[in-house]
Length: 502
Ligand SMILES: Cc1cc2nc3c(=O)[nH]c(=O)nc-3n(C[C@H](O)[C@H](O)[C@H](O)COP(=O)(O)OP(=O)(O)OC[C@H]3O[C@@H](n4cnc5c(N)ncnc54)[C@H](O)[C@@H]3O)c2cc1C
Image (tube, rainbow, N blue to C red; front, side, top):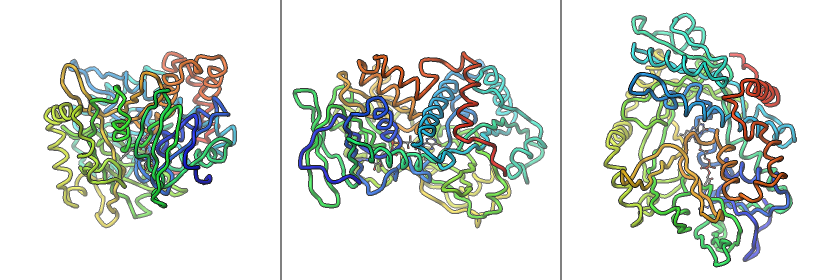
C-alpha cells in the first residue's frame, strides 16, 4: 500500500471502494490519460471483500445465454430478446477489454479470473418447455447466440448434465439449451490484479481501512471528501476534481451525502443471499455447467435458482442458490442501521409506494427467510434429485441493494438493474444496484467516462484508445456477424477459453 496521505491533498480522481467497478474505471482512466492522479479509498482492510469477492457472487459471465429473466415472454407468447442481446454485447466488450490488458501483461494469467464453463437453461413442464423452445428460436437468429443448442431429448440432456437428470421423474417433459462458450469469472481475483497494478502506477495512492464519510462540492466545482482512517481513528480531507462512488451497497448513503439534485429521491432495498456449497469432491467432479432455471412466481429476478460449476483459486467448486433473505444491512460487513439511516424526506414516499407495489416480493422474501434446511434441500433436489444433505453446507453470499427511485407516474418504482447517477456537471457519479453487475462493468464504466468526461472522450486520442481497448467500440456485434465471430475468436484465444474437461 502507498504511504499515508498528508493531512490534506488534492487529486484529479477519487475512487471510493475497491471493488470491480472502481478497478475497471481506474484502469480505463489511467489508460486514457496516464498522467491522471488518482486516490482510492476502501473502508475494509482487503480489496474486493464485498460483492466482488468470488464467494460473494455467482461468478457468471452474464451473456444472457442461460438467464431466463433476460428474455421475458410477451402477452402474445413471443419472447423479447432485446435485453439479452444488449447484455451479450456488453459481455463481449468486457472480454475485449480484459484481452487488451492480458496482451499488455497487466493480467498475465487469464485462467486465474476467467474459465470456459457451458451455460445451460433447464426447465420442466409443458408451458416452460414451450417458452424455452420459443426463446431458443428467437435467440438463434442473432450472431451473438450462434452455437447454442436446444434439446428435449432426455439422453442428450443426461450427456450435458448427468447429475441433473439422474433420478428425475421420467414422465415430466423437460428441455434445455446448451451454450458451450459460457464463462465463469472470478471477479475478486480480477479486481485484486487490477488494483495491484494500479497502485504501483505513478500518481496513484491506495488506502485500505479508509472510510469516506462526507462529500461536499466547493464553489469552484471540485469535491472535498472527509476520510476516516479506521485503524488510526483519525480523519482528513482530500480534494478531487472528479469523484466516483463505487461503494457497492455503500453507494446510496454516499450519494445522499453528496446532495446532488440528480441523487434526490433514490432509495435502496437490501436483499441478502445464501448458497449451498458442495463439499463432496465426487459430486463436484460429475457436474460441469452453469444450469439456470426459472424463478419462482413473485421472486426477484436475481433469485433465479442455478446449479453452478465454479473455478475458484484453481479449484473446481459447485454452488446452488441463491436463497434470498432480508437484512437491513447495505453491505455484508455493514451496519443494521444502514436501511434506517438511508431514509430521507425525499425518498420516503417512493420507498413506501415501491414497497406497497411489491408485496409479492415481500411475501417471497419472508418465505425464503423462514426456510428450514429441509426446504432448502427440496429446492436443490428440483435441480439435483439425488442430492444428500450431508454433501452441502450453507454459505452467506454478498449483499445487494436494489434501487428504488422516484417515478412521475407511479410515485416510486423498485428496479433490479444498475443505475449510474451523475451530476449534470460530470464532477461526480455513483453506481447503484447490482445486476447484471460485474460482467458489465466495462460497458458501464465506458458509458460513465463518456458522460462525465465528454470533451476528452470526444478527442481523437481518447477515441483511438477506446477502440484499442474495445475493438467493437461504436459498433454493434448483433448486426455484424463477421466482426462478432472475429472478435470472439480473438478474445477466446487471448483469454485461453477452452472447453474444460469434466
Ligand atoms: C449474491 C450475488 C450474486 C451475484 N452474481 C453475479 C454474477 O454471477 N455475475 C455478475 O456479473 N455479477 C454478479 N453479482 C453482482 C456483482 O457482484 C456486483 O455487481 C459487483 O461485484 C459490484 O462491484 P462494486 O465494485 O460496485 O461493489 P463491491 O464489490 O461491493 O465493492 C464496493 C466496495 O466499497 C467499499 N465501501 C463501501 N462504503 C465505503 C465507504 N464509505 N468508503 C470507502 N469504501 C467503501 C466496500 O467495502 C467494498 O469493498 C452478484 C452479486 C451478488 C450479491
